[in-house]
Image (tube, rainbow, N blue to C red; front, side):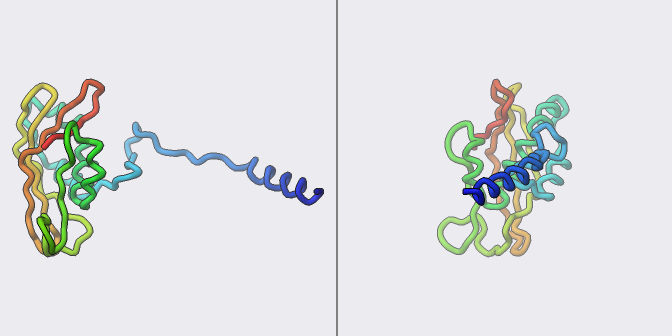
Length: 161
């Protein structure tokens, strides 16, 4: 019995000195989603994208969500994007030699985002755009030209295709 009390006191003394780590907040500049790593090719492509002058502010506000969405696509994690869809399922980008895979010959873990183009406002809170991916080893190309981003009333950006 005395051993149990001593052990408990020792554990309480050790844990009493522990503190919780400083966890990042979504408002921090260097915050990374815990579920998605933003790829350099996605960051670079979005940084080099020219939105129409009258729509740049809206496009800039959509960039954080676009980075996560497009990084998930590039690494074949399309199912993670279902939560960002306004309706329906997220666009699938797959690899492998069977069926209807986007890339048949790549062995790379992720594709590179080459560019985001044809940004066209379709409403004050929505735009349509095209993305082009390339498998870095096989150089296969995949185009998605019917993507739409829609800003919701709560400020969140969701997608359609």
